[in-house]
Image 1 (cartoon, one colour):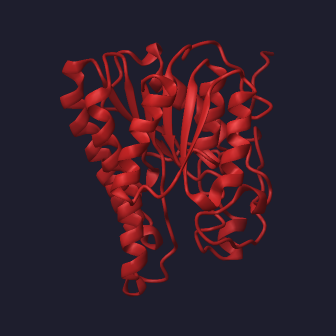
Image 2 (spheres, rainbow, N blue to C red):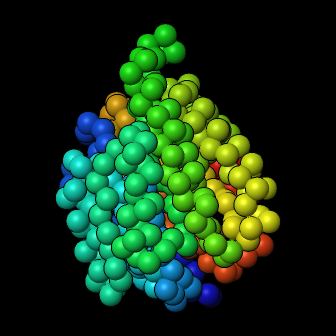
Length: 293
């Protein structure tokens, strides 16, 4: 029998305990700890010498990508909110442990000046920019469409779309042939939940962004793709506002029957950033536990 892992049992199979956090959510307050690949990800030099900027890189999917990129040989800058500095410091320590340069950029991507400046600061500190991962996001549960608050709706759109556009627009002129832009979309773009209607709308718009920009970027030798995660256990989940029952069953509606862990997405981001994906652009790569896009 071959030495393979049964994906149904590769990570936690039961649901998650009741808990509540305020946005953006912190790793130390998330029970159980998400697996970012700290003790499992093994690099193979696929991104040796490259320079990456990851928005929302302090925890969850962003941390898993930062760890993987560092172990594949890349220097890494991460964007995070000031209140996430502890998470950011922990991520940066993991990057530096691989002998790579790590840069912390604290601020809010809804601020056009900041979201633009992170590109300049990354290029200055790392000597250039080869990989841009647009991962920062905000979501909240809505108890009926009529209860959708204007303030929260604007935060969703400004974080997930406007902030993404600010950073992508600033980076685009500086991306050279071989560079890669990767957006964290979502299964919600294709299977929207009523309770996440504004979030799902932004994720659908991100898919359109990827497809349109890939057409413009292709003749320059720059690739633009997205990863579409399914239910992944990150600090964003207990900060979404779901009740105990929703957390207890989180991810059980997937064909694999469980939620995913951030570490299970890292390989997708490495692939899309690497030369292995040299003919992949305008694509949306699902990591959904078997849910269809």
